[in-house]
Structure formats: structure tokens, C-alpha cells
Length: 191
Image (cartoon, rainbow, N blue to C red; front, side, top):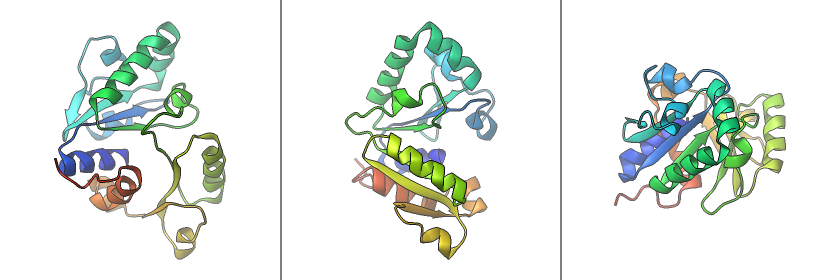
């Protein structure tokens, strides 16, 4: 979903976007794009530049290396995150609440919009609602992989995305557009 949003934004606007992936284990970006993408640790230690994919700067983060980097140089990590945000019109951080950088990235700041994405399972929705109470506003609940009419009737949901594996695999704009419309006013205008 994060990949689809960034790809669509760059393609439609021509403006720079960055995708920071905060995983606990291995990187989904490495699995989906290339295992050779420079990892956040390598970029942060000035051994590589971020890879560009469809015009999107990629920052895959292996959860095993951030603990070392964060414990040794938290200010350096903060500085790099600030630099990434400064250089990109759209900055997407694909992360979960247990990640060491989650609280750092979800602090209130101008232009920040928190999107809490969940599946339509009852337990997942309950956890997502709890998280909505913890993250700063503006925030929106996104129901991903909705399969039924009852999924679509869930209250307090800003965006409902259908379950469609073909769309997901192809990064279909129909998944990205509703999120961009909610998060970035005027994103469809090309400069």
C-alpha cells in the first residue's frame, strides 16, 4: 500500500517522494523490489545513497540494525529523518507501533497525517482503534482488504479499500488514490 501511494504520487505530480520502511525483521522492499537495495543503516552511515524506484527514494530498514544505530547515534538518525523529510514533498513511513522509531515519527508536527491501516478482523480493528487514541491528529483509520458489505459499514473509518490481490500486486492506483485524496490536498495537480 505504501509503495502504491508513493509511486502514484510521483507519477501524477512529478514531485519527490520517499518511503521509509520500518520492519522488525527483513525488509518487504528487499523482497518485492530487490535484495540489493541499500538499507537504512548503510545510508545513515554514508556508505550508500538511497535507491530510486519509479522516482521514489527508498529507505528499507532491517529491524535488526536499527537497534544498533539508534543506541549509538539517536541524534544522527533524527538528523537523517529530518533531511529525508526536507528533501521530499511526500514522506511515507510504513511502520508499526512496536518499532523503536514509531514514537519519534508520530510526534505532532506540521504536515503530519497519521494513517492507521488495519484489516477487517475484529481484533485488528480493536487494536487500530486503540492506536488511533494514541497518535496525534489529524489521523484517519483505513480499512484495508475489505471483503464484505459489513466490512464497509464499520463506523469511524475514513477509507475502505477492497480486498483485491491483483490490485495489491500491481500497486494499482485505485488503492493509492483514496489515501492520497485524504492525506494530501491537491496531489493530483502536476507542477
